[in-house]
Length: 252
Image (cartoon, rainbow, N blue to C red; front, side, top):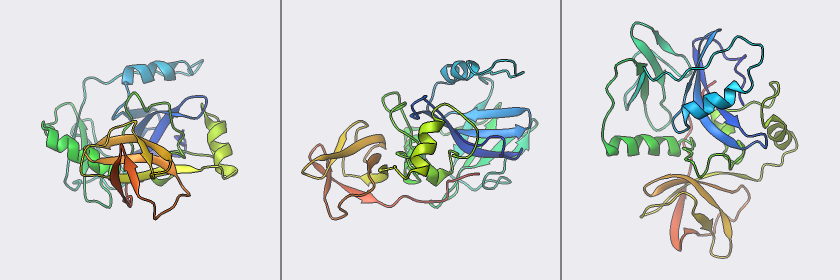
């Protein structure tokens, strides 16, 4: 759903794969290593299933899809040594380094045949929380295929294009953009207790939206863009607080 042709080799972007109705099935980082080689880094979606879906659109082109189960991915809450913003640093000899940082601080992602990742729940929770704070939804099975890019505010990440050629769901995305019909977007919520994906968010009088991604008491919800800012939001009868989304995670 993004402009791969306009991405320079040696850079990466946020990208995604939609249903014909314009609902997001998978959100991923797309790495353009050179004009002939693209890697899709999938934080949540099944790579085998996505490869099979993409294969359906290969006709006479010389394109091959392969799941790279020989590679490892590791993250660190530290500044990259060489990579910056969308620039990819590295090569076959010492792996790849990506800048995954934002307004909330530095992060580095490394892709190599041998990398050590922090094997503890606290690290995974902190990494996911950073994603949510910067408006990067983590979509599990129940939420994949439910939301348009606009409803997930993916313009903040520069993750889709309304100017490139056709792709599944492009007509819906472009029509919503040019007719100004996006009425919902992401909101960052937190609470003193766990917030569960799929729970309704209300204002005491009516249901306003749904939690689409969460970790502990932190969540991203799809809510109306126009709503009473003074209203007290609640999930399952428990008051939640709305926080401002952080910037700096967009890549192009």
